[in-house]
Length: 385
Image (cartoon, rainbow, N blue to C red; front, side):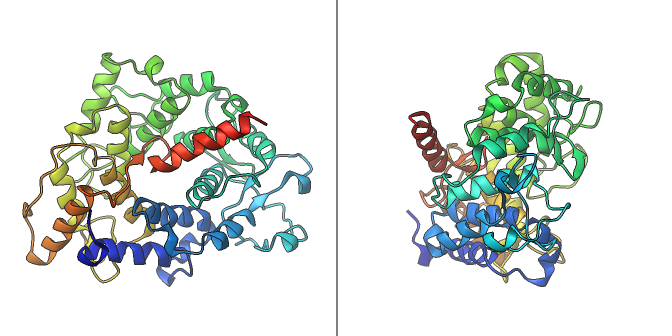
């Protein structure tokens, strides 16, 4: 086990994620409309490091619930969660009822982020309007493209990202019967390309992020074997395509530069397919090491010195490496091909991966396995009511 005092990377990551649960710096002003997503990455990072006790959980829980759209206040009875109070809705639950706007709508990704964060913070989801939220998610199914979901009532954007957000949210709420899972499986099957990966929509280019959303969704609705059976040509092509996305780190499309966020999208997909052991793990750690910002204590998108760290790339770097924790071919030592100043980061990351301080991630939901087991207990309690 790694001691906090001995692992500087661990210390700095804990400080960074804790900071991201509060006021955000000017460089993150563009994320203000998605505060719930930022909280998911920050809380998820602390959860992976088993350090959630460092924040006021109740305060964050109340903040998230203040962004819930309750069906008691909505005429069409479709609920969910908004991403922030940017459009003028108060974060105070009582005041929020008085300032409803026609632009104040739920977003499927915010629903997934809110539910996941509540679960991470120890909430039992008892205050979630399950019926209204599931009705809202069901309403996001696209009638002209069965199995596809749009982002929200006031956002017509639609692609594989929102399929995953809707499926994962319904899974968390134990309400997969609220959506047509057969249509979801059929739609995802149509998005597999000749390369093996999945696209955001049919006939588009395969993309690692879309592939994760497709594979994770199929696993959550128990359709993975029916769409891409073990031993099939489609499964073989998918695995080869994913493995070919690694140069040093991982990239999202063939021929594109490496990017730390794909550490998760690729490694999580391979873990769901039970092929994460085929990754060059030491190379992956080296790339993430080169994207470390030692001043801020977080990871950037690329090794570019002008690239600013952000909670998304920091969390996905960490959760991606967590997908590789259970593999046995991660070396320790000084296998680093970079400057001396990066050596301690590389060593600290390897120590973290080989210790019990980095929790193993449940790839289908992108949360630590510990919290997925807790979710199962919540489902069991619901089934008894």
